[in-house]
Image 1 (cartoon, rainbow, N blue to C red):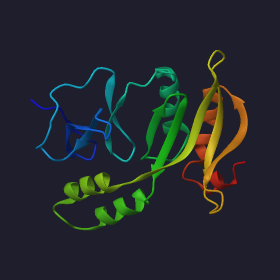
Image 2 (image 1 turned 30 degrees about the vertical axis):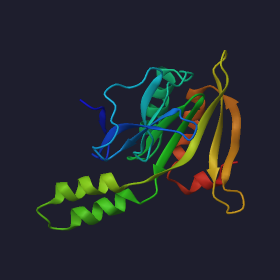
Image 3 (image 1 turned 45 degrees about the vertical axis):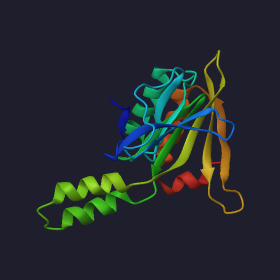
Image 4 (image 1 turned 135 degrees about the vertical axis):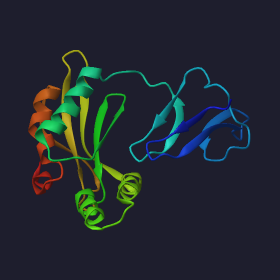
Length: 191
């Protein structure tokens, strides 16, 4: 049986093997069920789904962020922000919070306003069509003391990049101070 993976949008992907120009193996996911399909995940690799539901096979990442730190961010978003839809991505020493590019609340209200007998199907389609952008991230800068710095994404055309905000601190304090701004106008005033 070939390795397959269903992403959060319900799309089925199959793991393929190809070769690079230098003859080395390369691995990729595709929706095509034909080709050089793999039956096992190669040693040292893991399946990774990014916040926009793209599926990759990547080398196993070292675990730098603890499960507790991820849980603090998750709980903080639920407690301190008004976000109902978001994605959290962890890569090495960085925890990134992604928010929807679309106004999910407005689209949901439009769907609920319709008298369609296929309301739940319409809501599922909406959930699968949402795309996300990175907005806020916490970067572990001192592994021993577990000190993080915070950055927000800046959308000033000439500066489209990450900007440091606030002071360095523990993850709990930073989450309490900054996640409440996600989805709010005050986010753009953070320096």
